[in-house]
Length: 209
Image (cartoon, rainbow, N blue to C red; front, side, top):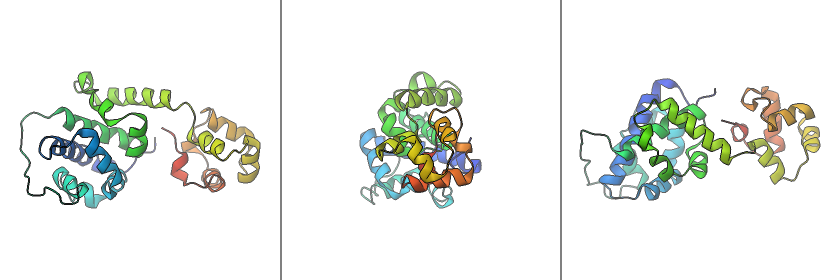
């Protein structure tokens, strides 16, 4: 499994994303999906999902929320509560899933909206995080039956044979990647680079969870 970043930052990522969503919802008074949209549009989202130490180790969830809203309402101070909220759990669990899958936050929540994830609080907040991830994986694959490779090939209106000829990747190997008979995440580096070049995308755009 290719993880999004070093595991040493995972606990911080989970607590910070949870704190950010809790603060945005209860103190800044945003609707969860509205604030999440702002987060996805921000540079903080991309830095967070790459596991940059300057954001995961250098800032709190409250500070990240302030940066997302561009200093609006910075005078509002967070309240501190004993029990974790549903929104805290949402960020906490989603950070783990993003780390485990290597998918971007945008790609995850395009398929499974943030409010739907939040509604998984019951019963998953009482379960092991891996059970939440298994459920997310099932939903993600059910709603994305086509691989990223196949979707991008079809978008360019290329046949498998044409893509094979352009990229130099054997036709049978290409077919196995598209049918998930072979794991493209474990593809030879020269294959994945050649496919990405032929499809005018980045190599990570072809990765599968």
